[in-house]
Length: 445
Ligand code: 5AD
Ligand code: SF4
Image 1: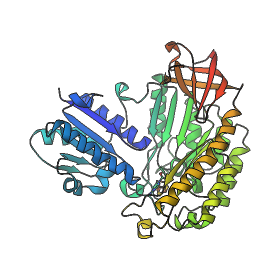
Image 2: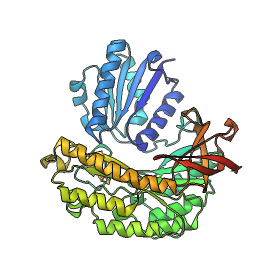
Image 3: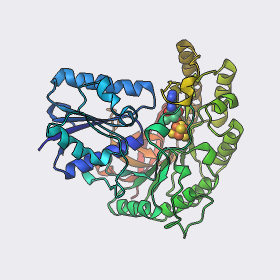
Image 4: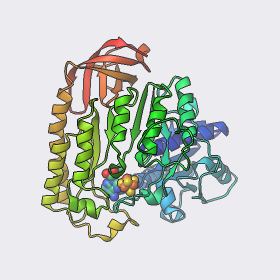
């Protein structure tokens, strides 16, 4: 039996695609291995959102070839594969096959072709009409948490972003399929599902089938209510797009305890000038209106975001607007990225005129501002009780276990392995910048 080692870069969609790639391979009599050394086939599921992620691919292929010469088959999957297609073979002639973002269902065919002696196999075609979205029990990234894709691709074309090119146009999965999937996971004992997609709240299925019995201002908030009605313990969803973020989503969260109190709403910049250049489709005032609704909700909803610094023409004044925005929003967490020009995007035509040094300075300043705010937010959890889904053994020696709250914060605590997969009440006794620490009070489901 041939052994396959699969390494995944990038977003949850890639993690989710990799789970299904492994599921297909296992059913086709390949053995998945976490050990690259013993593998016959090495697969990279790639990310192209920033240059750094793409470079990592070339570095890793170089390492594999140096260590094992031509002994292993190397396949490139995902976003870089989709964008580069055939040119990947020119960039790195030691690659054996290339499979685009929607061709991953045909991974075993690609491997078989190479094993039969075909070189440079390429498939950047569409998904099969009857593509199977299920994941084998053995290939899930967690036994208690499952990713459930609800929409693929993106139609927004923000000027800096490669995703509409690497993942194609938005395509929503039919609601009955999603709901059946969640019911099945619930029956299997899964505690938390993450409804995933580049823009989940742009969810627009072809028909309203499966959603007729649910209220909602948009198809997405109907879907949230429908998934809540399955009775699964926890539902999270990422990523949301500000322009399509209808406040009915907050109503749905307020009405349903199992819709988790966490919203990830990337803002990208605090400056209207930059938001316009990014073609985000929202102003900072529109964004603040949504934030006000989230902050005044009946439930304490945590808020996280993505910000890009150093976009072309970002002046000091624009950057100060981003600092003010961060103070206004009081994010529970924030991913900050330095602008990275991507070939093929509209912004690639703009001059990348914020210097490396300025980008570095702005990154540090924004990170520090967020750190101060976050420290205060995390401290406000001291002596409070939170419910934690126990996910894994802790990587820190002093603590045994680690999990996340409904508001998506990491909590570490002492306890026996019997608590894994359970939802427990934890009293918070200590807070650090990114983690809460506490002690177990009660065990629930
Ligand atoms: N440069 C830097 N950051 C980017 N992102 C997307 N494209 C780029 C780019 N070209 C960031 C955005 C997005 C997150 C997933 O990655 O903040 O929300
Ligand atoms: Fe990229 Fe914008 Fe689409 Fe998000 S909404 S994936 S940033 S184009």
